[in-house]
Amino acid sequence: MGVEQTRWLTLDGVSFEAEAFSRVWLLALATYGVGDIVTTIGLVWFSPLHVEANPVIAGAIALFGGGGFLALKLLVFYLALGISLTALADEDRLVFYGPPLVLTVLGVAVTAHNIALVV
Image (spheres, rainbow, N blue to C red):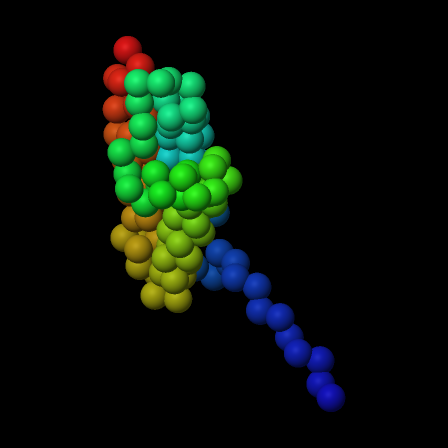
């Protein structure tokens, strides 16, 4: 019986920079993660005038409450990260940096929309 080698996914040997990778994902986390989550919670749970407009998220909230909402957000992050990491073998910059940038743009738009609803 041989010992099976575990192969870890790293940025060693590819043209992508770990610092740039961290920065784009931190930006996605700040906007789509924190910004959208905080403003959505503020609107949906603390404002009697607003409801969640996204039917998938509204369904998750109806069935599972805040945990369902956060689970969907986490699922989106994991899917985007998985898509991003598939680009390591091909060194495809668009697929590598695209998912966090899409989440960032979406996060800025949704957070700004939520803030506009409050004001």
